[in-house]
Length: 386
Ligand SMILES: NC(=O)C1=CN([C@@H]2O[C@H](COP(=O)(O)OP(=O)(O)OC[C@H]3O[C@@H](n4cnc5c(N)ncnc54)[C@H](OP(=O)(O)O)[C@@H]3O)[C@@H](O)[C@H]2O)C=CC1
Ligand SMILES: CC(=O)[C@@H](O)[C@H](O)COP(=O)(O)O
Ligand SMILES: [Mn+2]
Image (cartoon, rainbow, N blue to C red; front, side, top):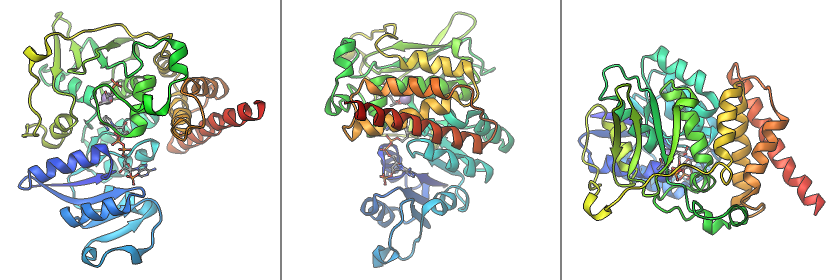
């Protein structure tokens, strides 16, 4: 029996991980659950999985805790995340919080010697060097949950050296793959939230539509697999069946295929090095008929170019990319800015905040705050200009 803590249990990844725990009650015991504000959903989860600790990072009135859940120790704010990440006897901590808010939980869990199952790509994007160093010191390599990175990790298992020549990072291309630039710039929230293949949380779904998700994933792969950006190629694959591939020096390419269902990569991380039944069938290749591959269009999707520039620039550039994007996506989801403004704001923030350092966690949070302020100030300037 493995004990697991789940940070971000009420989201898309968190609920799918709990689905796997439900399927395998003999293998997993849930000891901690956290959410931000989804109180009722968290209460339901506590009722079913009976963790020792549960927390909401938003503040809440303890009088609201239902009588039948008094067996569980409820916490709020930062303390909730820290306790769930580091203060239980869980062997594994799944970090499925969205955004840089997941970084502290990842670091706390690693410092406490836990095995981190990493869905939260933003932790590596912003704090990659700190997180990988902590994982190395703890002797607990990160287990990727992101579908592409899980695929790459699975392919690398086949090679004794774990060293690839090149990574082929697949991308669906999102809902706007075939649209022209002008139409993309005016896309609505409803259009951006219609991912062709995956059912995910709102932020990552918008990131897929802008291909900022792929930019973040190039950064994530750089840290997970110690691979320079010029050996990570983005391959647009609209069917999302090939979840990524790895090229070896003998010319062999290994790929991992599966239905676009996150329970497979989540289950792989939870059971590693074993495999467990996930409820997901293998793809029917005859039904699929063909799988196609295209080069990404960096004119229409500037996120890819910006991501590579950030990796080459180093310092806090990737943190600025992330923070400005998080703010712009939030503004887009509030329907305050057009879709095309997301990339414009990130590029402006990168121009204005070039050269920031990222030597320690304080530097990273400082760069993040500046990036958010610049991203939002662009919004105010444009509004006042109207
Ligand atoms: N969804 C997917 O299929 C995939 C997701 N990922 C990555 O996994 C992560 C989670 O994504 P996803 O599950 O889609 O996101 P969701 O928005 O669906 O869920 C996010 C979870 O984190 C909690 N949360 C949100 N903000 C904060 C915060 N500031 N502090 C603490 N907790 C917070 C939410 O709580 P509440 O419900 O209370 O708001 C919720 O439990 C992201 O980094 C994403 O990029 C990677 C690959 C695939
Ligand atoms: C499921 C998953 O891992 C997402 O990151 C997904 O890959 C998004 O699809 P895109 O390829 O459209 O960004
Ligand atoms: Mn992904």
